[in-house]
Length: 108
Image 1 (cartoon, rainbow, N blue to C red):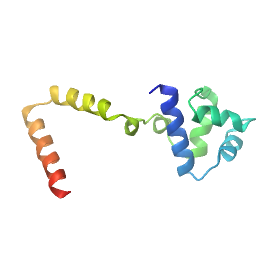
Image 2: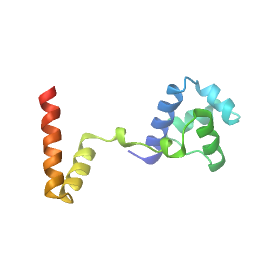
Image 3: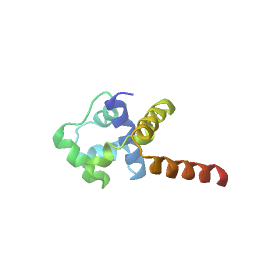
């Protein structure tokens, strides 16, 4: 998934969490057109630097929160991430991960 698409999904998620419509967010940011928010949310474009700060303020979030896409990863991407983590982990860390995973599945 492209950065612009991930950003758009995250922006929409945070906007809805804040209880704002696209129109309301556009007004708070000072964008002339509702279409601009729509373009951001559909991944057609990223916001201009000056609008990024306004968006954060309107949504009451830190900039890093707008770029937190971890939960949008596919199953395959997560498996790759986990494999990379496991490859560089100590035996003690791997044992901890195994106990944690086992405990999770036992509680289901």
